[in-house]
Image (cartoon, rainbow, N blue to C red):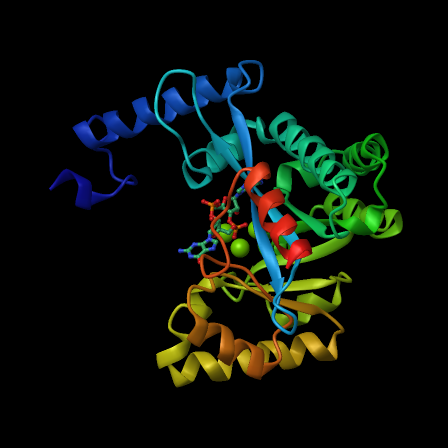
Length: 280
Ligand code: C2E
Ligand code: MG
Ligand code: MG
Ligand code: MG
């Protein structure tokens, strides 16, 4: 079967490959106009303190709703945006919108929660990235410590000096730095010493079987212990049940994020959740 022969063989014009190319071109072309057509949306997922069960932060997650067509999730278009460089203007928009939204919640009398924003490697290569972050914060009137930049382990393996310069710049600016999807990449633990991260996000794959898998409990315990030694806050991703939450709390994990608390929701809905907390 052609599909099983893989993309490295010379079977270029199989129906599957044609389909893949067409699909990919469609996404690429659509993405070029997405911002101008106002098709991008941010959803926000709360991060909850496991000790107090209160919302102390949120993560901005991008959604693409083409004028014609159905909603596209980030796993389908972010890789294309990264390869084409379109992630740079899109990511800039995300930063501005996320900061603006945080300022809006502040104005509504919300607690000073933190806003986490995912940032891709091509953005970190831009020499003016730190400036654009500073500007987004200034425009919104926010202290840099309210913003958390999430990067993945791939950043630790990248030898590009522009990236380390950007991370240094962010540190100097005073934003928080978070290591996303921890444990899934190939970076050695020792890389954690190279940059001063503030937050370590334990990947969902370690959390999902937690309540019935002793090995995952051991792994998470070890990750939390390392994080503590390095003075990093821990966030567990993909918390879907009370059982998982209780184990995480026992293990000393600081924050949780996942469907158990809330799915990623539009800004108004998260505002509503926070208002509910204030009135409780
Ligand atoms: P991520 O940063 O690791 O975000 C967490 C993902 O897990 C989100 O998927 C979220 O909806 C999902 N999730 C949260 N809680 C649960 C849960 O309890 N169970 C399950 N099964 N899933 C949960 P989403 O929104 O589809 O985003 C996927 C990825 O796309 C993100 O992973 C991030 O790497 C990337 N992404 C999203 N927005 C942006 C952005 O603005 N810029 C960049 N560069 N990447 C983004
Ligand atoms: Mg993330
Ligand atoms: Mg993650
Ligand atoms: Mg991810």
